Length: 228
Ligand SMILES: [Ca+2]
Image (cartoon, rainbow, N blue to C red; front, side):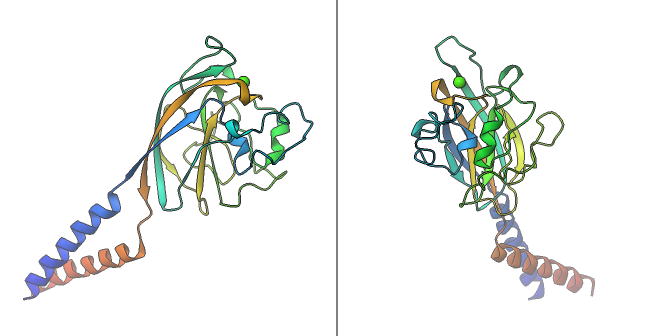
């Protein structure tokens, strides 16, 4: 009888182990016009603003596409396609970007997302936020795409993704990932788009953990009965 219970427990462990490991695939199209520094804004956030770097550019097309990450622990991203600037032949590249590093204008600090350092023009970027969005005027410290680990961004820090980045840690409290295109300013004249695929690994649920613990206990009991 105890041996039978042990076997049942093993089956529970295997079954629940599959649930924990199962990832979810999400596909999302990111326009070349998408700006991660506009995460959490609306097209009317700056109606009438006079700053030349963003006053005319916070429009529906430049708001970054986003996805709900509240249920996920890690994300692995791949992306393909081309995007660029202004016309069909101007500064085109894939999501890994091109040329030298492109620094976004400091005026974008206004929105509360810290600007990535040392990422090439056109690189695919992301930023994690809460549902409330970033705090205007208070961006966190900037990440450096060369020196810092891009799989460990904090809330409201733009980070560099490119065409392939695995096991990005969803920071504590994050509910949304926003995606966009690295540019200095003026996202509104950009062209093209990138197709992004995200393999998202769920956060283990407490009920799953309890079942795993129950299964482990069953294994121990099974071993103990066998030795006895
Ligand atoms: Ca541009």
